Image 1 (cartoon, rainbow, N blue to C red):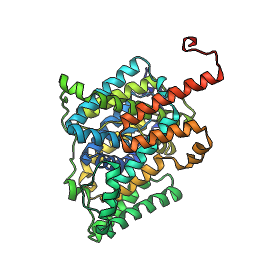
Image 2 (cartoon, rainbow, N blue to C red):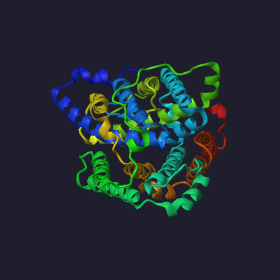
Image 3 (cartoon, rainbow, N blue to C red):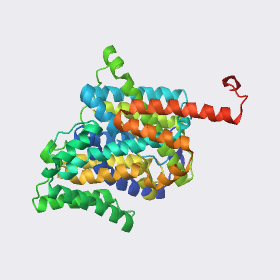
Image 4 (cartoon, helix red, strand yellow):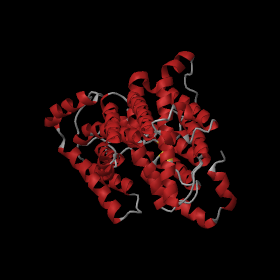
Length: 419
């Protein structure tokens, strides 16, 4: 249960601080446009992503069980957050996030960190690809510069987008595509450079310099705040608890799964071992903290964690530096962030959605067990056309049934009582 920060500080060196300082600032520059873009895609105000990255990012690093985990809002939550906001409003989301934090703390206390690993990989891959599909389609309107609103339902949204294509804004599409090309080029040529913020900043600057007819954060949402809001407790009446508990459980499940997957990826990159139950506890406190400041659900972010490792991050201090850097940007440069172009952020999220789907592994899925492929496809389709709760519940139930059937096939005399 001991946070990794407490362990690493016992032997902390000046050289490690230098590495953590550089890595933390680098990750902050990557997290800035991502956090804002995720908030907008979720149907929340841009400032909500900023607040989440600062508050939750600090708590996940300070209390977590991984040396290099970076936390904050992630693309996996876009679908859930958008659904909760649409059904219960933003106050409902804040309350659900608070409840999810309590669930995660309880899970950590009961040492449930190991249980998450038993979720079938095909289910995780299926809903991850499904989320990527939903995120990608949700960004097409801003990428094409189309006037909304558009239906939230995937099946209804696609014909509506096609019908609106004659109104396409060439400037918006050009800015979005240019941002995507720049991000890919910078990753290839300068892999250690925070290419996300550089690409988004360059294309957004082009919008301002050439006075292009492209929407920005400021033109749609107004100026970003330059300080954190005052913390306050969400509405936690009995009626609210009963109504929001299903959403809170989904948020807690996603936060637990994604954070532990991210920690496992980090372990492979640094040759370390994370503390799964401490990580769950940290995710719990981070989501409670984020909700108190009106933020979004948070979890460990695989892409930002990998960026931290590649930039030289050694200890949780890097994650703390990342949060403090974002706070400094909010206080000193929030007006500049308001000029970020929305098509540029859409291009960024389209690439994020593509990377989430891990296309390099599709061949592996096709060559694997037929039953795993079917489970992946069922989870994917349910995620896209129904909702994540149905998809995850159905996927886990089918996955457990498959596991039992395989066990029975391997040992015809096996019965549940044998375990």
